[in-house]
Image (cartoon, rainbow, N blue to C red; front, side, top):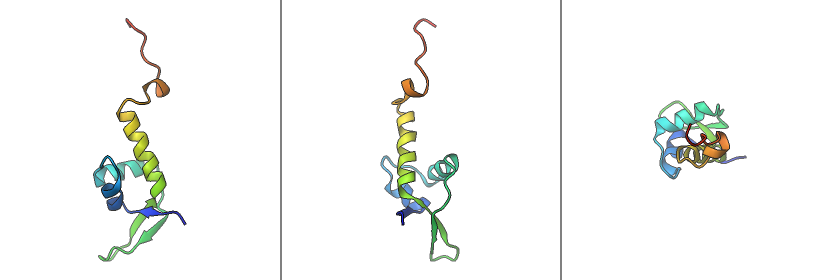
Length: 81
């Protein structure tokens, strides 16, 4: 079975850090489904998401945000245009 993270755990463990709200957006953007649920101690179980999926999505977002994929995703604009 794959290792899982809750939204809170992902926010605490990802580097560079990401807020819980942004992790939720990441899950929604990549349409990740929970791989399981974990008891929260507060009543309702909390969904767990695949740790590797969250790490890869996080890396992709920061690569795009940092401009590392500019030539890959869209070609640079022509000079003088």
